[in-house]
Length: 379
Length: 225
Image 1 (cartoon, helix red, strand yellow):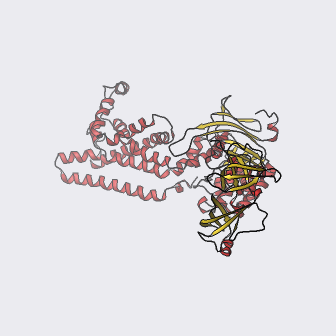
Image 2: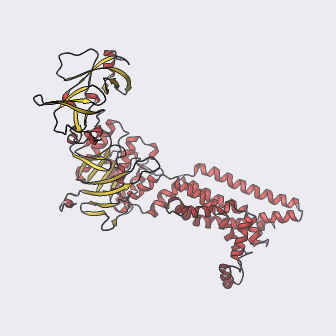
C-alpha cells in the first residue's frame, strides 16, 4: 500500500490474503484477498453470507491471522507478514462488536463497561463510563444484568463497552440486523454523533441492502473474498457493473439471455430469455453480443395487470399465469410463469382489488430502463 | 480407632482434592483450549485411572515409589525411608487415581463457556490471565466445584490403590475403607457396619451438598468481587 500520507487521516489500511479449505461443517473453500482503506467515518462492508465479511473483521481485530499482508491504523502496523508483526487482539486498540455482542452475563452493565478500563483509577473509570453511558442513553440501566435488557439496550451497552476504551477503529458485524428500523436508526444516530468528535474509521458489515442505503456514506462490496466494487451506495448498488454485486443488490429476477437485435435509434436492444421464446427489450449496452448475456430486474419494479394493458409506454408486456403467491409481512410475493418464471412483489391491497389467486391470468409490465444487462459468465 | 481412621481419610481427601484443584485446573485449561495434535494422547492418559483396576495402578505406583525406581531411590536417599507405605505415598497415589474426576468436569465446563466471551475480553484489552480470572473461571465455576468435590469424594472411597501402596498402618495409611476391610476380616461385623455406615452417610451428604450448591453456584459466588 503506497499511500505516504495515510497516517495523517487516522485511517485503517488493510491488505490481506487468507485461504481456507472447504471444511466439514459445510463451508466452501474461500480465498480472502482484499485490499482497501477505511477513512474516518462510516464505511459499509456489504456482501452475501459466506463472502468472508466476518473473517475479514476477525483478521483486522486479530482474532484470526491472515496468511499474508499488512494491516495498519494511522500508519501504525498491527499486522505485517513480511516483518513478522502480529499484535494480539488485546494490544490492537481496535473496537470490534461481535454479532452476538458477547456481553458478560455475570456482570452488570456498569461492570461490563468498566471491564476494559482497568488501568484507570476508580474515579477516572466512573467518569469515563458515566460519559459514555449518557452518550448512549443507558445510564439508567447501569446496575442491570445483560439478561434484563432488550435487544436495543444490549446493543447500546455493547457499543458503550467498546467505545469507552476510545478505540482507533471500530468494526461492527451486522450488529443491528435483528432490531427494528426505529431503534436501529436511533442507535446509528447516537453512534454518528459520538464519532463526530472522535473521527475514527467505522467499518460496518451487513448483507442487507436497506441498511446500505440507510447508513452508508461509502460502500465496499465483498464477494467471494474480494472487494468487487466501492463507492457511494448508489454507485455500488443501483448501477452494478459486476453480476455478483447485482445479485447482492436485490435483483430477484436474473435470466440468462441471448442477443436478438439492436435498435440503436431507440437506444434499446432485444434479448431472448434462454430456454423460452420470451423477448425482452432492454437498454442498449456496450457488451460483447456473441457471448452469453444476463438481464436482471427487481421484483418491485414489475407491474402486474389483471387484464391486457393498452396504451402503455412500457415496451415489455408479457402474458402469464400465477403459479404461487405468498404473503410476507406487508408484501405479497407472486411467482408468474410467463414463458420464464418471474418474481413480482405487490401489496396485499393490490392482490385483493385485482382478485388474484393461483392460476389467474395476468400480464407483466417491465419497463426497459428497469432492466439491467451484464455479460453472463461464459460457459 | 474409627476416629483416627476418619481423620486420616479426611486429611488425605482434603490434601488430594486441593492439590488436584491446583494441578487439574491448568491441565483442564490446556485440554479445553490447546490445538495440539497429540492432545488426544494426554486426554487418554488422564482418563486411564477411570478404567484400570486399582490393583494395576497400585502395583505400578508401588514399584515407582519404591526403591526399584530412580524417583523412589532418590527419595529414599534424601529422607531415609521409602515413599511406599507412607501418607505422602498415599497422597501421590490418590492424586493419580482421582485425576480424571477432577479434570473431566473442569475441562467440560471450560469448553462450554462461549468462546465469543473470551474473544470479547481480549478485544477489550484483557490478557489471557485476566480473561481466565474474570470471565472463564466465574462462568465455569459449577464445573470447577464439581471437580473439586468429586475428587474429594472419590478419594474418601478409594480402597485398592491404598491397600496396594499404603498397606494398613494405623494413623499413617489405614483409611476408613481399609478399616472396614480389616473389621470384616476379623469377623467384627458390628464394627464394620458402623464404619461402613459412616462412610456411606459422609459420601451421600457430600454429594447432596454438591448438587444443591451447584444449582445456585453459578457466578453468584463471585458477587463479592
